[in-house]
Structures are given as C-alpha cells and as structure tokens.
Image (cartoon, rainbow, N blue to C red; front, side):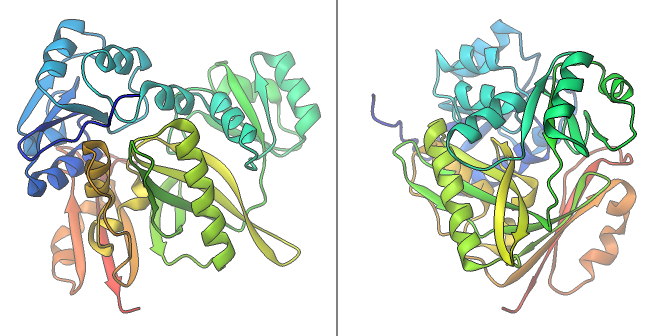
Length: 362
C-alpha cells in the first residue's frame, strides 16, 4: 500500500456534483489555501459561484473527465449517486476519496444493509424483492407494517412506501416503479439520530456527538445537539461509525443514520442508512463545532490532521425549505442566528434552499 498523498496549500480538490454540499466544501477549502474545481452536468450549479474552476459535462463524458482529473490533485463527491464507473475511471488517474467501493456499497440499499449486518451491527430485518412473488414471500417473513424501498436512488423519502395491514402489496410494488427493491421491517423507534464522522487514509478517526433529527414530509427539518441520549448510546454510536468507516476503508466525512429504540427502559440504536458524504444532519457543525464537517472532510481527503470536534454550546440547525428562505431578512435580524443560503435560483416545494443555525449557552 502506497503512502497517503498529502496535499499542500495551493493544490486543487476536484468535486463531483455542484449543489449546496459541494458549495460548502469549496467554501471550507478556501481559507485553508486550497482551490476547488467543480464537475457537474447541471448549468448554473450553486457551487460554480464559489469555486476556482468548474466543468459542466456529463458523468460519462470520458474526455471531460480525463481533463478534469489531470487538473486536480484529489477528487471527492458531494452526493452518493455519482456513477461508480465514473469514480473508477477517475481513480485510475488521480486519488478519489472516498473510493469507488464505498460508493458502490452505499448506492444499493440491499448491499448496504447486508454489509452492515455482516459487521454484526443491528439493522431492521430486511429481504430482497425483485417481483411480486418475492414481495409476498418477504412480507410473510418480515410481517407488516414494513417499508418497501427501491434498492437504488431515492432520498428524502423518495422511492419508498409503507405497507400496512390490509394494503395491496402489488399496488405498493407498482408505486415504486416495480424496480428491484428491499423490504425492511418497520422499526418502532423513539427518535431518529445520526453520527457524522471522519476517517483519514491512515486510519485516524473522529466522530461528532450524536445528533437528534426531526423530519417533516420525509425531509430533515431540524437537528439538535446534544441529543437526548445516554452516554452509552453516544459511545456505541461512535463505535458503530468507526467500524463502518474502517470496513469500507473510508476516507472523508460520512454519516450513519440510526433509529433510537428503547427496550426494557434502556436506549439502543439500529442502523438505518450510511451516507458517504458530508450530511445535512451535520450542518450544525458549520457554526456550532470547533471544526465544521466541511473543513473536516477537506482535511481528511487532503491527508491533513483531523480537527477538533467539540461543540460550542447547545446547537439547533433548521433547514429552510422552499419559500421558507424568503424569511432571510427576519433571520438576519435575529441575534445569534447564522444564515446560510445556497444560491439556488428557484425556490420549489421540498427544495432545500438554505439553513439557519442557532447556538445557545451550554
């Protein structure tokens, strides 16, 4: 195994994807003396505005990818649906963090659940579904209620449907487009929580505190830290993230989304999903931690020392969805509020337009 490549100030980070996460990575890289080059197919991508350079091209444009790879010193990505073939192609030219293996596993919900389960980490019960007969067999095994999800793509609640007692299973399969799927047993959780963590190529690891998350219409509405969890859950959650990161050979920041469950009065966690990127539930770190998740990601992929993860008080992060961002003037007038707008041209229902963090005394 070759020694990890260490970037120096003045080097360039290539970022696949041009949304708000790429934008915030680019903004975090600049104070560290690093340049960024955004590669995205969409015109007017928000990250274009803050990067040193950008390329607008498709993810399967090999000529454009080659030129991009030779112009940067390391490549990362802001979302998990970058084609694995793209990451593999780039990885033959320039280091790609996290690597194609982590990307491939986390793109497929069945592969991801299987991977986590084989580590001895608890997940919801699950079964593969490829057709209606397979769905009937899975429901007989797992029971109802259960959640039917497409194996690939889908976020913020897309590509999934709950099947309850009396529901038509065939109709549920049709609702997700009859795509290859996974059926998951419904977890009677108390709250949704997550851990955002970082791992370097040489195995260094740091995790932020457990974050408590509130969703509305399947979209993250609010994250709060500290979460109302026991010290044991804090420790177990960080260890789960460490084991996942190590098993993936992961480099960069990632999130593990979990369900908080209570059994016989004791709290526990069940892993729901892995996000191989900086994560919405970690946005609180941008103002509420010594090192933001975006700077931490830059440090990790650059081969630099990881930063401190301690929080700076009680923190609350609220997403601004659709026209909620129109309240920017009132938010700016609020003492202690930190506004972040993503530079998106059009506010649409369900679209993340920005967020605001509020920090309170411990």
